[in-house]
Image (cartoon, rainbow, N blue to C red):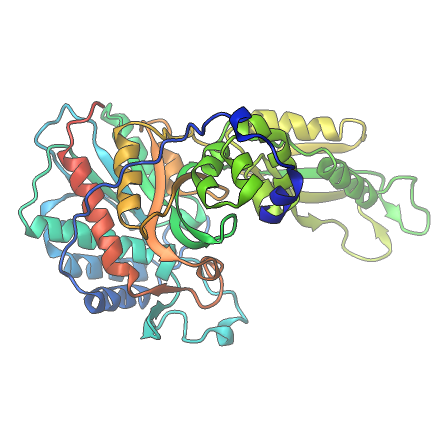
Length: 486
């Protein structure tokens, strides 16, 4: 996108553009602790060595590993598990509550998931160090879950443990939700949200994974702290094409397989709206505009004026385009069993990532309209779906705390920008029981390491760990002490 925007704009009088209206958050004073990098690296390595791999539709999969991990957490963070009230949410998920002195204040929720994805079979030899050995080498802790998200979990728990050791007693109730199945469905988070709902409680905010402190942001080639204020929803549909079967030597004009192929093409050629509306992309561009060159920076700082040109530029690349609207991804095709028999049905799965502008019902209507002229084709939901949760505020006390702490834990001068997460997190379960959902892990990470998540050679730089503890201490203490309005 950077190259595209530079080429799009001729010189324009700056006076005609107006002034940017995005307000950067003020840094919040850091609440650091003396716990060392080596101690934290060893804790993360120990956590990685417990292979808490989850499996879709099998809640008790790997129960022994999750029990071992729970025992490890209780041993490593004894004050946290002795002081906070633990509510079992099933299958290893645990909801920890530190009651505040003022029960009239809405609680704050901090999420972390215990589970990790498996290593793809056949790729084991591609790892520099075995995925579940938790090797500390070359300034990194290596292994599955180092970034996603045992590094987050270890430093969050360490932050709480060290605050409690100092006698911390919050004014506002704090909850830590440690889930067992974020990677495969999110039942643990759903149970936690239901717990709040059953008590008539509504959280002030939820803080989960998602955004990060990227050292080489592609749009600017500079550091940027990206705080997730929105994420996409999730919908998979099954497209079924039906036609006459029989011997392949005398096929009908339209076979089921051919009809399915035509349906997929028509769906892909009927994309969803792509725009800056209904999400945080415009504010993100304004926040990053100071690190963009020339007319690119002018355009990014005024998306209301240059929105159409910005959208056209972003549509040229896959990742920027995904931030502009609901995406369409055919992923699975089935049909037929032998080469000389015409199948009566052929099926495809198409995965949609729903932009906050588009709910599942509207998405289904959109897809069905694309194939309305194809007799024998149907489009139906294949599994449970989730609409995109509401976009969180980029003004107010919660944003000031979370984004302000991000600013104070980033390299000096780093912009803090709201972002749309194109994947999904546990936080979506709390959409009905929280004022705002935020997603941020404060590790300083390069794009190369982000690309290792769910892939080969996942790793966490050890120097990140004390910084992450400081960030979580800052937000935990700030949330617990504040008397901001609910």
